[in-house]
Image 1 (cartoon, helix red, strand yellow):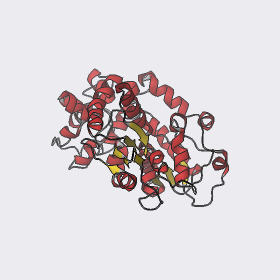
Image 2 (cartoon, rainbow, N blue to C red; image 1 turned 90 degrees about the horizontal axis):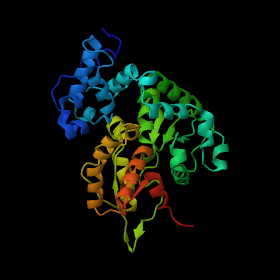
Image 3 (tube, rainbow, N blue to C red; image 1 turned 135 degrees about the vertical axis):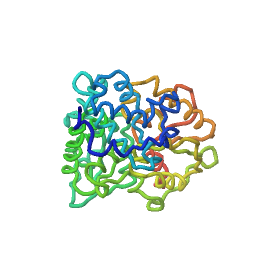
Length: 354
């Protein structure tokens, strides 16, 4: 028996109704019951009762194969908190060398504040700006600041009143999703102490994790902070016509926090918005998933790229660094003319010229 493997009553909520099946990308691609939320919960129950050992090959494979997109939560009539179950599952089984090496290396880097500060790219004046009581603070993100430095710069262009303390570290989402649940929560609590008041983040996955630990009132995703109409913006024009844009949801932002209207409203303010089929489904980035399971990740991405190119858009917009990297890489490999950009970057480009 492994009675303490999962939180009380989390497994009991699942009634095996099957509503989750069509919402799950891995079940959709394989048709394998074990690769569905319902099937994985049955594996978790067997691990809990001791009918399966923690290192059972099928259970190990499914803990890794799951994207953790939480699309199943939105359609579940019983309110199963699948995201919590997955985090607890990996927390119990991804220990030491059992944790995939790429995840270990990324977590090691993200857990070093001095390294994160070295990756900082926000202008010096912003770094030194003192933090007033209850002043909203911009979370820079661990790897976003290195991979996409223009995102933080754009966020400050749109909202220059944001404070950007230098002492901030990782929010812990990376750790919580990769087998170090308590470590991820502690990092979120520390960030909450370092950034008192409301934390504004340009990363959907970070927003969902911080809201889970600190409370929803402490966290705003950037599109919630810069609402449509709040900033004077011009329309984006390409070759004499209105730019055409589409939006790819961050899974955790949409499925965890329910934020989907705000980014689309901002885009409609500056461009011709085109909704693509499947925008609410995972792009295959899924945090570290694209690194841990690149073939599966690319298989999930391909139909999305087909839909983006078929829509005849100029830009596909994302609100998460992993999604942005995934889309950008996939489009470049195809030689596509569609450009992947972060929401803050696109909207900042619509600010009136001086």
